[in-house]
Image 1 (cartoon, rainbow, N blue to C red):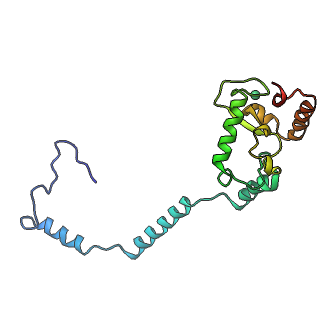
Image 2: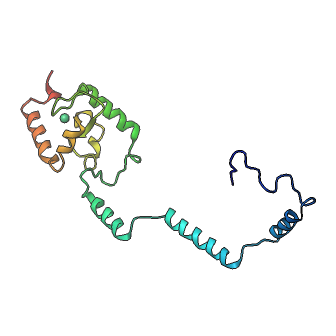
Image 3: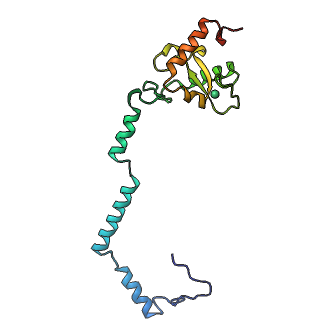
Length: 175
Ligand SMILES: [Zn+2]
């Protein structure tokens, strides 16, 4: 829409087809106005380009790289193909809350109790030990930082915990 500056009076103000020859002629020209074939083609092409841009996806190579890096357990947090949506989320939330409560909302590695950064670690992997999935003793409260530091060391961390259980030092056996 054209916005006129304040105080500017359009030349055709108050003129109608009936009172002005020029206005009548213009109106007739516009009624019969059609996009020429060339301009139609141009419009079609530009909207085609827009569609292309809207649906832009990563290149095949990028997509392959992405899928390779996460494929079949390569991703450190791989849960055996189980996505959080498909696991029993209510049970999982409950389990996590029980673990947090038992550990007093405190990271069991560094003692961080600031909150808001806590995660429940599965001592025996979530994906491999289905029967231990929702066992509170299989969970441990860790802050995000400590949890990530266990990356690729989960096995040895587990050995450590099992050893402490055998020695009677694990919190689960302390009263
Ligand atoms: Zn921590």
